[in-house]
Image (cartoon, rainbow, N blue to C red; front, top):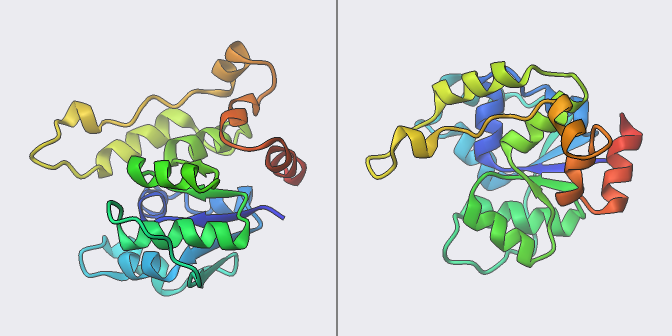
Length: 189
């Protein structure tokens, strides 16, 4: 079974670009940590995200980690997402925050970001990469310290790009998934 634990950022973007159902297409179950759901329901969250988080689809569930991790330099939601992914033996943790992904790697948790997730969907011809990037770019939040260029999402690679880079349409996942997890993901398709 392919189990994905999802953090706030990727869920937020997938809802905003109308691609949240890709989680159901690429994973049998998606788990949201309780702290992530709280962020999705917060008043500052976009209305569409709050609406989605209010009534979760059948393929998504909310769980709380029983063994939190100690990491002062990442958010509570990130810590709970990493801990929950470890506890549940998740196939992958969907997370964008670079520092949190470093913590996950130190703890042996496989991660994939929003762009990598969309690349996996594009490899299965479920989405159009250029359209997704354009939609994400419209929803990026810019801080005073970061320029628009620094915040721009990287270009999504198409299945053809991956075939040029390596053989096999899912070969790019070799950097993200262990062989056993990659086999489970490919078998589920």
